[in-house]
Length: 430
Ligand SMILES: Cc1ncc(COP(=O)(O)O)c(C=O)c1O
Image 1 (spheres, rainbow, N blue to C red):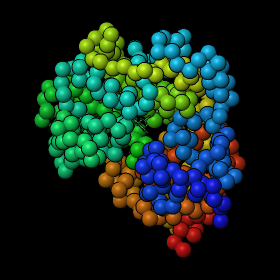
Image 2: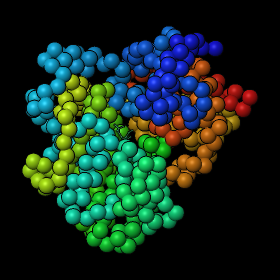
Image 3: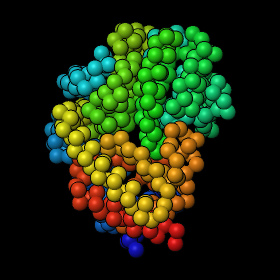
Image 4: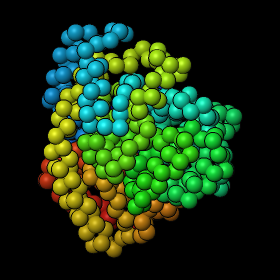
């Protein structure tokens, strides 16, 4: 039994003051039951809770910690930047450096605007897409998450051409009436929707690799088909690479699949663990933004010097691509071990992976979209999650979240994780 006294006390105090005791819902462990632990510190691939328990971490602060926690160059950069002041509200020298680094790694980006979260990045990309095309509708896919903006909080409708319904209370139906939701990996549905809404669709936004319904890869040719269809229809293609950017390769999913979107959304890794977002793309589109053009977008803390300094240190460490080779090796090792552990326990687990992002679905069939993902056995996942936690491995507290390996994970960490998985799976039906 792990000691969790202080975490329990802190959670009880949080429940009194914060809705659900957390500042972002998944953290509450509601999908898996139990209570969250409170983190005291993190270093490399490990986190320690306030009761002194040590966990090998595969959440990696939901993606940003690709180099491991408290990466020395990032910590140094933040400390140095903080000595000069934490925010100025007028340009600072980190901003053009950050923009240039993003552009160097993402050749589809001519101009980029920094903001403060992935949510803001997606919201603003949609706005500029609408402003530039003069069209209102957007297409998104079920299972893709683009932050908690009203018009993007939409789940799948009943049919390919059905207008979406709000996924959240508090979002008026009118705010989502321009959002068309389609099944991921279904290019025919996209072709039909573009025909049915001719000259009305400003943009298609998607996670080119879906990390918010587990881990779903695009089928062969799906992204190419989207590129062709959007070009034919004068619709912009927006890749939400908040999660995949700088993660699945140094140039994101667009580098991996050789696709040039019109706009790209960023977040997570580009802040090195500090709050950040960005969106960028074709110059003619980005020039619709104020102060050059008529589309308004702004932010008191946008381009914040601490976030920029941290992000620059992260991108400098990633730009050679060597880190990604190491991540792939670790990913291969983890995948092989997890598949073996499931086979030894006689369990159907579909392990899907791209580099350092992965998901083990408790089900036997490959997952291509949200409805496939929903077929997996969430009760088994819950038992697996608690089995892993008991054995000192922290995976995301939901079947529908991707796991993240960092460059700080050692081979020993991976092997211990596989051992923990083998043990957890062996006892999963007990
Ligand atoms: C693909 C994707 N887009 C957007 C977001 C929203 O980013 P943020 O949580 O920084 O607002 C997330 C967050 O997980 C994400 O994974």
